[in-house]
Image 1 (cartoon, rainbow, N blue to C red):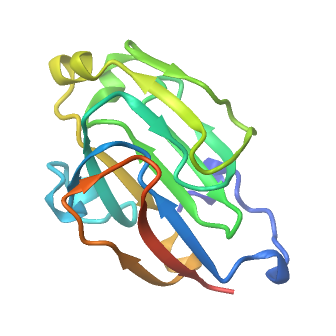
Image 2 (cartoon, helix red, strand yellow):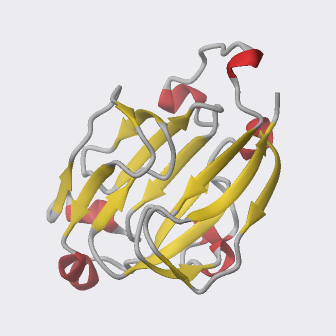
Length: 172
């Protein structure tokens, strides 16, 4: 679905793909089940599966090592392709596209190689609370059918940025 949008129609050699990938929390905050995100695009897994975080601050870090394949002009959403070929979408808040980038500062750009834990975006949490539908931030694996053999989610109520949330066995 996102291959053309993210320009991911490049072939990767199978031996270069790790067998397992770890996805870290990109934010500090409360865990929200993807099914409980108050937006059907995410809760009904139309874009893929994952988790969400209700952030306690406005700092977003990379959940994995890879490449920035898309950063929306409004800086509210970032697409990452991991070393194992997973496509990870971080969507900061709900209906934040309407903010037109106000309150968002990106620290990366498309094509950048990134390391897990590297700062990606800072945002004004209070402004998002004021102007958006929600601060809940979905973290979605958008190519789950093509790239994921199995997924294991941790069961916690609170997350610290950089903490493991998903362990994924990658299809080879």
